[in-house]
Image (cartoon, rainbow, N blue to C red; front, side):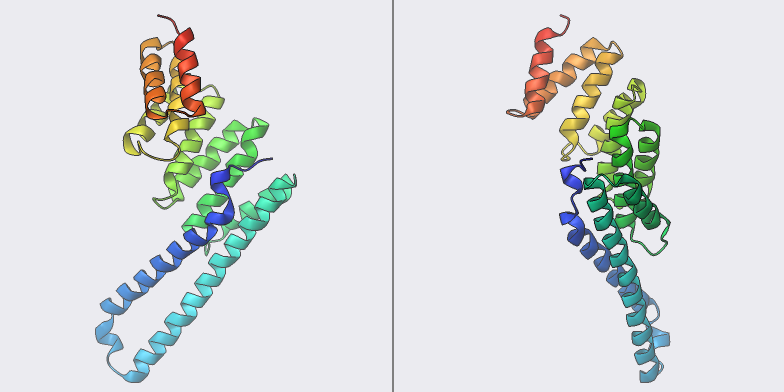
Length: 225
C-alpha cells in the first residue's frame, strides 16, 4: 500500500500549528467579549487565565494524540497492516477532541486504503466525509480524491461534473493537473469528443514538460478528427 506523497505526515506540523493558531484566536475573542466580567477582580482574571490555560493544554494534548495515531496508522499502512491502520483512523474520526485537520486527514487516508483494492464506494464515502469536515486548506485535496475515485469507478458523468466544479473554484491547485486528466478521460468515455479535445489541448498547454502533457499530446494525435 502506497500513501500519496502529498499526504505524508511531514505536513503534520504545519496543520498542527494552524490548529493552535485557531484556538489562540478563539481564546482572544473570548477574553474580549468577557472583558467586563473578567475585570471585576484580579483574582477573577487569574482564575480565568488558569482555566483557559488548562483548557488549552487539554485540547492540545488531544490534538497531538490524534496526530500521533495518524502517524502510527501511516506506518501500519506502509507495512501492509491495513486493518490496524483502519482501526486507528476510525478512532481519530470518532474523537470529538481531534482537530478538523486530523479528522480530514484520517478520512482521506481511509479512502486511500480502500482505493487500490477497488473498494471505490467506500473510498468515495471517505473522501466525501473528508471534504465536508476539512478546513479550507485541505478541502481541495479531498475533492480531488473524489474526482479520481469517480473516474476509477466509471461514473463518468459525475466525475466530469465534479472535475469541472473543482477546476472552476481552484484552477491553480496542486491537484489541478490530475483533475484535468480525469475530466478528459470522463469526457472521452461519455463520447464528448469536442469537449475532450479542448481539455486535452488545455492540459498540453498548461502543464508543459510533464507526464500529463505528454499523455494529452499522445491522445490528441490519436483522437477522432
